Image 1: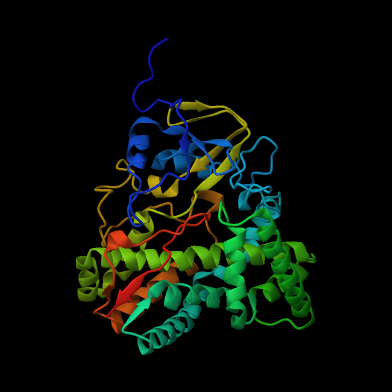
Image 2 (image 1 turned 180 degrees about the horizontal axis):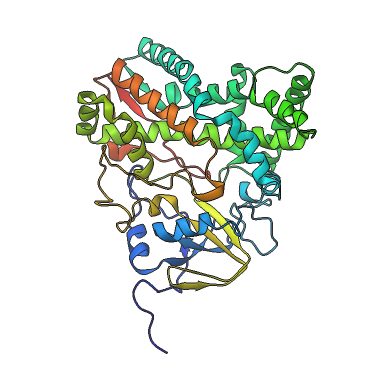
Length: 409
């Protein structure tokens, strides 16, 4: 039998996944090797189960766009992600409930909340909150942890406002999201407690909203279902709220810190934005593309034989689409390893692809742009308070981020 050609190799060695990186803002060198020589790599997940890792842009986009392959890892043959009994968030009732036949109907109803018109209307309030948080940070200055002072509270305030819950409960929401997104940090018992507390809180809020509807998303979903002669069940509302919490708070909160960290790690980037504020939008997109620690990745359990990267992948395989590696693919982006603040077009996969792409991507973009605009205007002298190589990653969670972002001005 002929030896496999380079690029068609499927390595027999098994890599531990996630793959460690040399520093918080830099990708693992292994990504580049895998893209070049091993498009479908065997990996061992934190659970101990094996999966196949995709690192090429075209392959990741192909799998994410294929409606046959869904994110719920609830099949007995699917790999478990986390090192706990439940197998992690991708095996949870949340993902399963939102992965049913009526998924597109659910997306259509929830998507009405994320229209361009509505998100544009939200921007002044988001900018005002960012201004207030910067005021508080400056008052306590001249140094701060940007993550805890701005990156954490802004997205959770947005989600609390969207769900119609009190922003005074934001610490609870952050605690719940950390536990529910655990890979190795929390025990199953701790995750169960977090899930039970969140369920009880939201059940009470949903009941109160049914009695006294407002202008929040929960109220709108109930009204939209009523208008179509349907009933929006409590379980769907609860799962919607949990999905928004996990996707809308944790990922954006971490991205604020990583984005600012990347821009300040090479301060010529910050200086360029100060000189040309029209680059804010493209700079945000490039930060999303360059994110070297975006998340665990997007898993897909395939129930049909397919070919990926010229490699035959049998059915009943769990694939992990590594978004960070795909976004640095030299075959998809010119000078892929360089951060180009004016890059356009920029078809990165930070928000996924196809029918399951992130519903809240317009909101996330708005928050990131608003934060960057406010910081450039208010703190032009902003700089890292520690060397970039001393920044530390958050470990043990499905999402990636920095433990803190020390800055001064």
